[in-house]
Image (cartoon, rainbow, N blue to C red; front, side, top):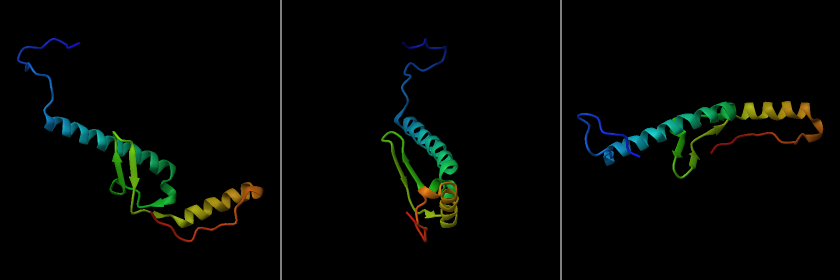
Length: 101
């Protein structure tokens, strides 16, 4: 179904390749911002340097890549300690010293 053309509207409703590229870029940016928000709310306190520059998103292929990040060692070890106190039988005898990816 195609809606009727209005007075002065061009006959062709197809977008130019340039506007399609802009649309794709905008969609990718929106997806990147949405994903960044989810990552910040879930793992943000355990990772340092999480921002738009560290996130590469290929919307249509479903590929997500994080780079140049460092683990927040203090936050991770605090969480391990908290969980060990809450469930001593499940505690693992580990402590994070450093980490990056």
